[in-house]
Image 1: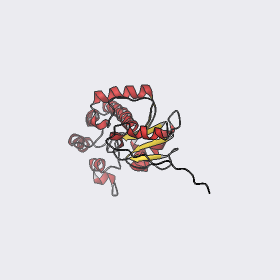
Image 2: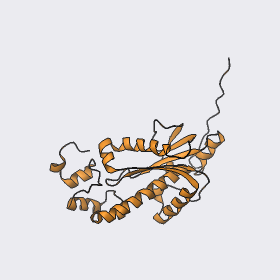
Image 3: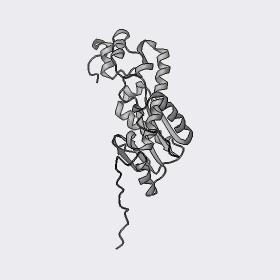
Image 4: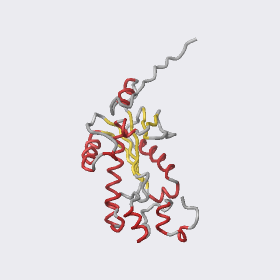
Amino acid sequence: MTVAFRPRPSVVRRDSGLYAYERALARRGLTPIAGVDEAGRGACAGPLVVAAVILRRQIDGLGDSKLLSPPVRERLYTQIMRVSQVGIVIIPPGEIDAKGLHKCNVSGMRRAVAQLPCDPEYILTDGFPVPGLPAPSLAVWKGDQVAACVAAASIVAKVTRDRLMVTLDERYPQYGFAEHKGYVTPGHRLALETHGPCPDHRYSFVTVARGMGENEMGAGVA
């Protein structure tokens, strides 16, 4: 009886550097590797942006996009777009309201991977598993802090979304989108109370519902 050979699993220490996951997978012949992350999940206005990135070379300075300054993010974004393969999906607020945030997030990750110019052999996702991906995958807790390709995806998603929110600010300057990027802040709450929501707010979010007034929204808003 022949027993199929199974390679010993690699153990990746979270303090082994940002490219440890990629190196461990490459030793198993699993390349290219795609990282997937999103931006805008916690916002109550603007789109959800999901990015998938296959890094073709190492880029110094990668990290969690939320922990980087805007100028550093912009510089890294330019480098990533120049030397990587990238898929970007933009999900508008109306779709989030209709389908739900998590469902849109999962669908967006699948769609972003599908947009990549080549098929990955392995996929790293940030935070939670994503069923239905076209290759084996691993959900990495705080992946944008420990896996280079996920960090790159977080930067692409964040910069793409921030630029969209700055454009939205030009259309609706009363909300301050260029400053808070659609997240809930005291100033954003005050603007909602004063002006009500605009068409690019997420009406299914409780903060926006309160801005409209319970009588207009009705019951059952979550």
